[in-house]
Length: 357
Image 1: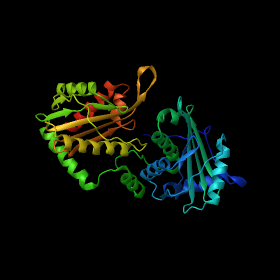
Image 2 (image 1 turned 45 degrees about the vertical axis):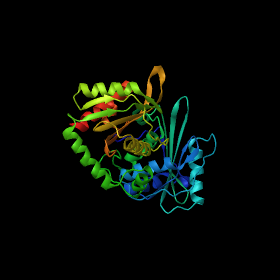
Image 3 (image 1 turned 90 degrees about the horizontal axis):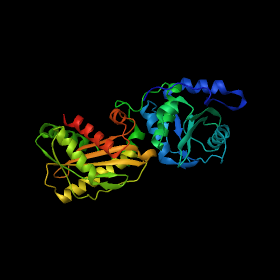
Protein backbone atom coordinates (compact mmCIF):
# COMPACT_ATOMS: atom_id res chain seq x y z
CA UNK A 1 0.00 0.00 0.00
CA UNK A 2 1.02 3.56 -0.60
CA UNK A 3 -0.08 6.86 0.81
CA UNK A 4 -3.00 8.33 -1.07
CA UNK A 5 -3.71 11.87 -2.15
CA UNK A 6 -6.88 13.81 -1.51
CA UNK A 7 -9.38 14.30 -4.32
CA UNK A 8 -11.40 17.46 -3.89
CA UNK A 9 -14.13 16.22 -6.18
CA UNK A 10 -14.87 13.17 -4.02
CA UNK A 11 -13.88 14.24 -0.51
CA UNK A 12 -15.73 17.02 1.27
CA UNK A 13 -15.87 18.43 4.78
CA UNK A 14 -19.08 19.96 6.03
CA UNK A 15 -20.54 20.96 9.38
CA UNK A 16 -23.41 22.99 10.62
CA UNK A 17 -23.14 26.63 11.72
CA UNK A 18 -20.33 27.30 9.25
CA UNK A 19 -17.78 25.51 11.40
CA UNK A 20 -16.37 23.32 8.64
CA UNK A 21 -12.82 24.62 8.54
CA UNK A 22 -12.39 24.83 12.31
CA UNK A 23 -13.74 21.32 12.95
CA UNK A 24 -11.64 19.75 10.22
CA UNK A 25 -8.53 21.67 11.29
CA UNK A 26 -8.96 20.46 14.86
CA UNK A 27 -9.39 16.86 13.68
CA UNK A 28 -6.28 17.07 11.49
CA UNK A 29 -4.29 18.63 14.34
CA UNK A 30 -5.18 15.70 16.60
CA UNK A 31 -3.78 13.40 13.91
CA UNK A 32 -3.09 9.84 14.92
CA UNK A 33 -3.79 10.76 18.56
CA UNK A 34 -7.43 11.55 17.80
CA UNK A 35 -9.75 9.42 19.92
CA UNK A 36 -12.21 7.65 17.65
CA UNK A 37 -15.12 5.24 18.00
CA UNK A 38 -15.56 3.11 14.89
CA UNK A 39 -19.20 2.18 14.35
CA UNK A 40 -20.28 -1.06 12.65
CA UNK A 41 -19.77 -0.51 8.93
CA UNK A 42 -22.61 -0.94 6.49
CA UNK A 43 -22.77 -3.15 3.42
CA UNK A 44 -25.48 -1.66 1.22
CA UNK A 45 -26.80 0.03 4.36
CA UNK A 46 -26.92 -3.08 6.55
CA UNK A 47 -24.69 -2.63 9.63
CA UNK A 48 -22.17 -5.45 10.11
CA UNK A 49 -20.09 -5.17 13.26
CA UNK A 50 -17.09 -7.33 12.19
CA UNK A 51 -16.58 -5.08 9.15
CA UNK A 52 -16.34 -2.02 11.37
CA UNK A 53 -13.93 -3.94 13.59
CA UNK A 54 -11.66 -4.47 10.58
CA UNK A 55 -11.59 -0.71 9.94
CA UNK A 56 -10.73 -0.17 13.61
CA UNK A 57 -7.96 -2.79 13.59
CA UNK A 58 -6.43 -1.24 10.46
CA UNK A 59 -6.53 2.25 11.99
CA UNK A 60 -4.84 0.87 15.09
CA UNK A 61 -2.11 -0.71 12.96
CA UNK A 62 -1.77 2.59 11.10
CA UNK A 63 -0.76 4.23 14.38
CA UNK A 64 -3.96 5.32 16.13
CA UNK A 65 -3.85 4.12 19.78
CA UNK A 66 -7.16 5.62 20.94
CA UNK A 67 -9.74 3.47 19.17
CA UNK A 68 -13.03 2.13 20.52
CA UNK A 69 -15.43 -0.27 18.81
CA UNK A 70 -18.27 -0.82 21.26
CA UNK A 71 -20.83 1.33 19.45
CA UNK A 72 -24.49 0.85 18.54
CA UNK A 73 -25.52 -0.03 15.00
CA UNK A 74 -26.43 2.87 12.72
CA UNK A 75 -28.69 2.30 9.72
CA UNK A 76 -28.58 5.14 7.16
CA UNK A 77 -31.70 6.50 5.47
CA UNK A 78 -32.60 4.40 2.44
CA UNK A 79 -31.49 5.76 -0.94
CA UNK A 80 -29.98 8.84 0.72
CA UNK A 81 -26.98 10.65 -0.73
CA UNK A 82 -23.74 11.11 1.18
CA UNK A 83 -24.69 14.50 2.62
CA UNK A 84 -27.95 13.15 4.03
CA UNK A 85 -26.20 10.09 5.46
CA UNK A 86 -23.57 12.31 7.08
CA UNK A 87 -26.20 14.47 8.76
CA UNK A 88 -28.17 11.42 9.89
CA UNK A 89 -25.07 9.76 11.35
CA UNK A 90 -23.99 12.93 13.16
CA UNK A 91 -27.46 13.26 14.67
CA UNK A 92 -27.34 9.58 15.71
CA UNK A 93 -23.98 10.08 17.43
CA UNK A 94 -25.31 13.14 19.20
CA UNK A 95 -28.07 11.07 20.80
CA UNK A 96 -25.94 7.96 21.50
CA UNK A 97 -23.07 9.09 23.77
CA UNK A 98 -19.57 7.81 23.02
CA UNK A 99 -16.41 8.04 25.13
CA UNK A 100 -14.21 9.40 22.32
CA UNK A 101 -14.08 12.78 20.60
CA UNK A 102 -14.93 11.46 17.14
CA UNK A 103 -17.03 8.78 15.47
CA UNK A 104 -16.39 6.99 12.16
CA UNK A 105 -18.97 5.33 9.93
CA UNK A 106 -18.41 3.70 6.55
CA UNK A 107 -20.87 2.22 4.09
CA UNK A 108 -19.99 0.05 1.08
CA UNK A 109 -22.39 0.18 -1.86
CA UNK A 110 -22.61 -2.28 -4.73
CA UNK A 111 -24.45 -5.19 -6.31
CA UNK A 112 -23.79 -8.89 -6.73
CA UNK A 113 -23.32 -8.38 -10.46
CA UNK A 114 -21.05 -5.31 -10.37
CA UNK A 115 -19.35 -5.79 -7.01
CA UNK A 116 -18.51 -2.78 -4.85
CA UNK A 117 -19.06 0.50 -6.67
CA UNK A 118 -19.01 3.17 -3.96
CA UNK A 119 -17.30 3.58 -0.57
CA UNK A 120 -18.65 6.26 1.76
CA UNK A 121 -17.09 7.45 5.02
CA UNK A 122 -18.27 10.01 7.56
CA UNK A 123 -16.48 11.52 10.57
CA UNK A 124 -18.59 13.24 13.23
CA UNK A 125 -17.87 14.82 16.61
CA UNK A 126 -19.25 13.29 19.79
CA UNK A 127 -21.59 16.30 19.99
CA UNK A 128 -23.13 15.36 16.64
CA UNK A 129 -21.48 17.64 14.07
CA UNK A 130 -20.15 16.47 10.71
CA UNK A 131 -16.38 16.92 10.40
CA UNK A 132 -15.55 15.14 7.14
CA UNK A 133 -17.26 13.05 4.51
CA UNK A 134 -15.73 11.08 1.67
CA UNK A 135 -17.09 9.28 -1.36
CA UNK A 136 -15.01 7.00 -3.57
CA UNK A 137 -16.10 5.44 -6.87
CA UNK A 138 -14.34 3.89 -9.85
CA UNK A 139 -13.78 7.43 -11.14
CA UNK A 140 -11.28 8.07 -8.32
CA UNK A 141 -7.59 7.16 -8.35
CA UNK A 142 -7.51 5.54 -4.90
CA UNK A 143 -10.53 3.38 -5.74
CA UNK A 144 -8.86 2.30 -8.98
CA UNK A 145 -5.62 1.49 -7.14
CA UNK A 146 -7.18 -0.57 -4.34
CA UNK A 147 -9.89 -2.07 -6.61
CA UNK A 148 -12.02 -3.29 -3.69
CA UNK A 149 -13.60 -6.64 -4.49
CA UNK A 150 -14.47 -7.77 -0.98
CA UNK A 151 -15.22 -6.06 2.38
CA UNK A 152 -11.64 -6.29 3.67
CA UNK A 153 -10.40 -4.28 0.69
CA UNK A 154 -13.19 -1.74 1.19
CA UNK A 155 -11.93 -1.30 4.77
CA UNK A 156 -8.44 -0.79 3.40
CA UNK A 157 -9.69 1.96 1.10
CA UNK A 158 -11.33 3.73 4.05
CA UNK A 159 -8.02 3.73 5.94
CA UNK A 160 -6.07 4.78 2.85
CA UNK A 161 -8.31 7.84 2.54
CA UNK A 162 -7.68 8.77 6.17
CA UNK A 163 -3.91 8.27 6.06
CA UNK A 164 -2.93 11.64 4.56
CA UNK A 165 -5.59 13.42 6.61
CA UNK A 166 -4.17 12.21 9.94
CA UNK A 167 -0.56 11.39 9.05
CA UNK A 168 -1.06 7.65 9.53
CA UNK A 169 1.34 4.84 8.73
CA UNK A 170 0.86 1.79 6.53
CA UNK A 171 -1.27 -0.85 8.31
CA UNK A 172 0.12 -3.56 6.01
CA UNK A 173 3.69 -3.15 7.26
CA UNK A 174 4.95 -6.17 9.21
CA UNK A 175 6.23 -3.78 11.88
CA UNK A 176 2.87 -2.00 12.28
CA UNK A 177 1.81 -1.70 15.93
CA UNK A 178 -0.78 -4.08 17.34
CA UNK A 179 -2.92 -3.00 20.25
CA UNK A 180 -6.02 -4.24 22.10
CA UNK A 181 -8.24 -4.35 19.02
CA UNK A 182 -5.74 -6.46 17.08
CA UNK A 183 -5.44 -8.78 20.07
CA UNK A 184 -9.21 -9.17 20.27
CA UNK A 185 -9.34 -9.77 16.53
CA UNK A 186 -6.62 -12.44 16.78
CA UNK A 187 -8.46 -14.19 19.60
CA UNK A 188 -11.68 -14.24 17.58
CA UNK A 189 -9.76 -15.49 14.54
CA UNK A 190 -8.23 -18.44 16.35
CA UNK A 191 -4.64 -17.30 15.74
CA UNK A 192 -2.30 -19.42 17.92
CA UNK A 193 -0.49 -17.91 20.87
CA UNK A 194 3.17 -16.85 20.76
CA UNK A 195 4.34 -20.17 22.22
CA UNK A 196 2.73 -22.20 19.45
CA UNK A 197 3.93 -19.77 16.77
CA UNK A 198 7.45 -20.08 18.15
CA UNK A 199 7.26 -23.88 18.04
CA UNK A 200 6.01 -23.68 14.45
CA UNK A 201 8.98 -21.50 13.49
CA UNK A 202 11.34 -24.15 14.89
CA UNK A 203 9.57 -26.90 12.91
CA UNK A 204 9.71 -24.75 9.78
CA UNK A 205 13.46 -24.33 10.20
CA UNK A 206 13.83 -28.11 10.57
CA UNK A 207 11.72 -28.62 7.45
CA UNK A 208 13.91 -26.18 5.53
CA UNK A 209 17.05 -28.14 6.46
CA UNK A 210 15.70 -31.54 5.43
CA UNK A 211 13.22 -30.58 2.69
CA UNK A 212 15.33 -31.83 -0.24
CA UNK A 213 15.28 -35.42 1.03
CA UNK A 214 11.96 -35.42 2.90
CA UNK A 215 8.75 -36.88 1.48
CA UNK A 216 5.70 -34.67 1.01
CA UNK A 217 2.15 -35.88 0.43
CA UNK A 218 0.13 -33.30 -1.53
CA UNK A 219 -3.59 -33.44 -0.81
CA UNK A 220 -6.22 -32.36 -3.36
CA UNK A 221 -6.69 -28.60 -3.06
CA UNK A 222 -9.99 -27.05 -2.06
CA UNK A 223 -11.13 -24.60 -4.75
CA UNK A 224 -14.28 -22.59 -4.06
CA UNK A 225 -15.28 -25.22 -1.53
CA UNK A 226 -14.71 -28.25 -3.81
CA UNK A 227 -11.73 -30.63 -3.72
CA UNK A 228 -9.67 -30.90 -6.92
CA UNK A 229 -7.23 -33.77 -7.41
CA UNK A 230 -5.73 -32.24 -10.56
CA UNK A 231 -4.31 -29.45 -8.40
CA UNK A 232 -2.56 -32.03 -6.22
CA UNK A 233 -0.96 -33.67 -9.26
CA UNK A 234 0.06 -30.31 -10.72
CA UNK A 235 1.51 -29.11 -7.41
CA UNK A 236 3.48 -32.33 -6.86
CA UNK A 237 4.94 -32.16 -10.38
CA UNK A 238 6.06 -28.54 -9.98
CA UNK A 239 7.51 -29.17 -6.51
CA UNK A 240 9.54 -32.09 -7.84
CA UNK A 241 10.63 -30.15 -10.91
CA UNK A 242 12.07 -27.44 -8.66
CA UNK A 243 13.68 -30.01 -6.38
CA UNK A 244 12.06 -28.57 -3.27
CA UNK A 245 11.19 -31.94 -1.73
CA UNK A 246 10.10 -35.46 -2.71
CA UNK A 247 6.42 -34.86 -3.47
CA UNK A 248 3.62 -37.18 -4.52
CA UNK A 249 -0.07 -36.47 -5.02
CA UNK A 250 -2.74 -38.10 -2.89
CA UNK A 251 -5.50 -39.82 -4.82
CA UNK A 252 -8.17 -39.30 -2.17
CA UNK A 253 -9.81 -36.07 -1.08
CA UNK A 254 -9.45 -35.20 2.59
CA UNK A 255 -12.19 -34.07 4.92
CA UNK A 256 -10.97 -30.77 6.37
CA UNK A 257 -13.15 -28.31 8.27
CA UNK A 258 -13.82 -24.96 6.64
CA UNK A 259 -15.06 -21.61 7.92
CA UNK A 260 -17.20 -19.23 5.87
CA UNK A 261 -16.29 -15.82 7.25
CA UNK A 262 -15.13 -12.41 5.99
CA UNK A 263 -12.29 -12.64 8.52
CA UNK A 264 -9.58 -14.26 6.39
CA UNK A 265 -7.49 -15.18 9.42
CA UNK A 266 -10.44 -17.08 10.85
CA UNK A 267 -10.81 -18.96 7.56
CA UNK A 268 -7.07 -19.69 7.46
CA UNK A 269 -6.77 -21.05 11.00
CA UNK A 270 -10.00 -23.03 10.77
CA UNK A 271 -8.46 -24.78 7.77
CA UNK A 272 -5.16 -25.28 9.61
CA UNK A 273 -6.93 -26.81 12.62
CA UNK A 274 -9.00 -29.03 10.37
CA UNK A 275 -5.84 -30.23 8.63
CA UNK A 276 -4.19 -30.96 11.98
CA UNK A 277 -7.14 -33.19 12.91
CA UNK A 278 -7.11 -34.92 9.52
CA UNK A 279 -3.38 -35.68 9.56
CA UNK A 280 -3.47 -36.84 13.18
CA UNK A 281 -6.27 -39.27 12.39
CA UNK A 282 -5.05 -40.52 9.00
CA UNK A 283 -1.33 -40.89 9.82
CA UNK A 284 -0.13 -40.59 6.20
CA UNK A 285 2.94 -42.42 4.93
CA UNK A 286 5.03 -39.28 4.40
CA UNK A 287 7.27 -36.98 6.40
CA UNK A 288 5.07 -33.98 5.64
CA UNK A 289 1.62 -33.21 4.24
CA UNK A 290 0.59 -30.18 2.14
CA UNK A 291 -2.92 -28.82 1.75
CA UNK A 292 -3.92 -25.69 -0.19
CA UNK A 293 -7.17 -23.79 -0.33
CA UNK A 294 -8.12 -21.25 -3.00
CA UNK A 295 -10.77 -18.68 -2.05
CA UNK A 296 -12.23 -17.87 -5.44
CA UNK A 297 -15.40 -17.28 -7.40
CA UNK A 298 -16.14 -17.53 -11.14
CA UNK A 299 -15.05 -14.40 -12.98
CA UNK A 300 -15.56 -13.14 -16.51
CA UNK A 301 -14.16 -14.93 -19.54
CA UNK A 302 -13.63 -18.20 -17.70
CA UNK A 303 -11.22 -16.63 -15.24
CA UNK A 304 -11.31 -17.08 -11.48
CA UNK A 305 -11.79 -14.10 -9.19
CA UNK A 306 -9.22 -15.15 -6.57
CA UNK A 307 -9.27 -13.29 -3.25
CA UNK A 308 -7.00 -15.57 -1.25
CA UNK A 309 -4.60 -18.52 -1.48
CA UNK A 310 -3.99 -20.45 1.74
CA UNK A 311 -1.61 -23.32 2.39
CA UNK A 312 -0.60 -25.44 5.34
CA UNK A 313 2.13 -28.03 5.86
CA UNK A 314 2.00 -30.47 8.78
CA UNK A 315 4.48 -33.12 9.85
CA UNK A 316 3.34 -36.74 10.04
CA UNK A 317 2.17 -36.23 13.65
CA UNK A 318 -0.09 -33.35 12.62
CA UNK A 319 2.04 -30.53 14.02
CA UNK A 320 1.94 -27.30 12.03
CA UNK A 321 5.10 -26.56 10.08
CA UNK A 322 3.85 -23.83 7.73
CA UNK A 323 0.58 -21.91 7.72
CA UNK A 324 0.63 -19.20 5.06
CA UNK A 325 -1.85 -16.96 3.28
CA UNK A 326 -1.65 -14.69 0.28
CA UNK A 327 -4.04 -12.04 -0.98
CA UNK A 328 -3.90 -8.86 -3.03
CA UNK A 329 -1.97 -7.08 -0.25
CA UNK A 330 1.05 -9.37 -0.71
CA UNK A 331 3.90 -9.05 -3.21
CA UNK A 332 3.91 -12.69 -4.37
CA UNK A 333 0.16 -12.61 -4.98
CA UNK A 334 0.48 -9.43 -7.01
CA UNK A 335 3.43 -10.90 -8.94
CA UNK A 336 1.48 -14.02 -9.95
CA UNK A 337 -1.93 -12.32 -10.27
CA UNK A 338 -3.80 -15.64 -10.04
CA UNK A 339 -6.80 -15.96 -12.35
CA UNK A 340 -6.95 -19.76 -12.65
CA UNK A 341 -6.36 -22.90 -10.60
CA UNK A 342 -3.00 -23.32 -12.29
CA UNK A 343 -2.03 -19.78 -11.31
CA UNK A 344 -2.96 -20.55 -7.70
CA UNK A 345 -0.81 -23.69 -7.87
CA UNK A 346 2.11 -21.60 -9.08
CA UNK A 347 1.63 -19.19 -6.20
CA UNK A 348 1.68 -22.07 -3.69
CA UNK A 349 4.94 -23.37 -5.15
CA UNK A 350 6.40 -19.86 -5.17
CA UNK A 351 5.59 -19.57 -1.45
CA UNK A 352 7.04 -23.02 -0.70
CA UNK A 353 10.20 -22.12 -2.59
CA UNK A 354 10.65 -19.06 -0.38
CA UNK A 355 9.95 -21.01 2.79
CA UNK A 356 12.06 -24.06 1.90
CA UNK A 357 15.25 -22.22 0.98
